[in-house]
Image (cartoon, rainbow, N blue to C red; front, side, top):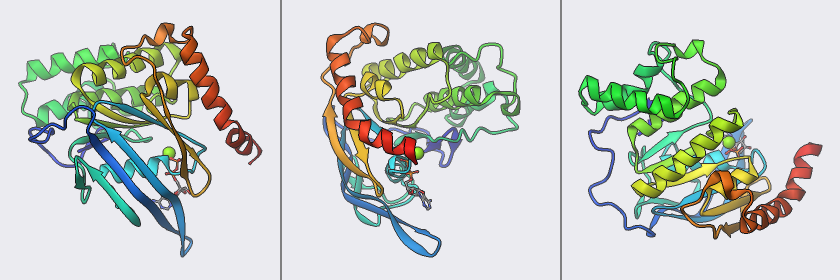
Length: 282
Ligand SMILES: Nc1ncnc2c1ncn2[C@@H]1O[C@H](COP(=O)(O)OP(=O)(O)O)[C@@H](O)[C@H]1O
Ligand SMILES: [Mg+2]
């Protein structure tokens, strides 16, 4: 698995022997609760989580901060198990690190002694690709994330947004079956954000990937998702799962003028309004 660009276990082929059928349940949270010890006391972070992420779809997660979105991603990645209930991946309980997922955490975890190019090329190097091929692929990814001209820079010489883009490019170089993305575009300007959103949609659609995508941007949750799980409260629960009945092949640039998109975002904003007010008053 790769976490934010950090390889935890080295696998020549990260894809499992049998690919899940498109539409089959890939990640399943069944009656999941997770409690953490905080100040000597066991406190619930999430409760009653039932969610199925099907092969080939993007499920976006939205909700107030602290409601357990990252906790769900951590459990899908096998960083830790649930306190109650079961987390399954491709029908099997996630016991240890899940090698089928690439996880881009909120931290970038770049290797400080490696250049941008060498950070991004690392998964290809581990897979044994020849130098010219891995440089060519890394250059493609560098162009895609807008880091052209920074190939030889080290992470300490990059801005926060650039580090995120570098970590995303490295995740894509690893080419995992499932992407776990935790607010991947947080600090990016609009142009780059749209470019990367289109790229993730394209990758998922054309390569049959699956993604669990956390965002605090409600418009992005609709634009990127096939379904959107809306969290509420502390401990976090899933209040509702919205079906986003927009075509899988969607154009991010013109989506904002689409009547159904406008309706869905209005619906999500309305559902979220009470918790948004509570956040502002905290
Ligand atoms: N490793 C941990 N140890 C203790 N508490 C944690 C840990 N991870 C998360 N929490 C707590 O669980 C709750 C949910 O956190 P998190 O999943 O990070 O929420 P979100 O991603 O929605 O902002 C928070 O109250 C947080 O403080
Ligand atoms: Mg989080």
